[in-house]
Length: 106
Image (tube, rainbow, N blue to C red):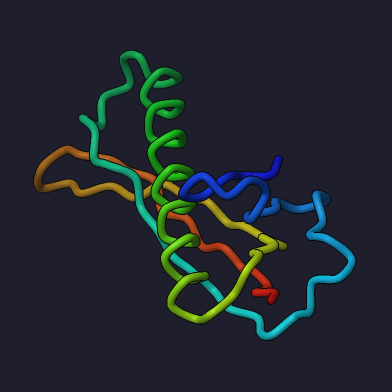
């Protein structure tokens, strides 16, 4: 699944989707992102997971675009990801936390 950032097609590549052959790797990095918080109830659990997952991926794409611009890259290839749930017992809220390993290319 490639992702467009700021109207530029195919600048973020996920897992088996590879950047162009002429792309030159310039570094490996890690990015962490979170989704919005939701009520931590069991009711509608699948819907809440999907909502949080969509928010997490959208936030990750946004942050990857920022990092690519900040570091002077042209493409990002996300090689690995780890997504887990977080919970705040005091507020009864839950959210997703993701850690993404990626290579930056120019």
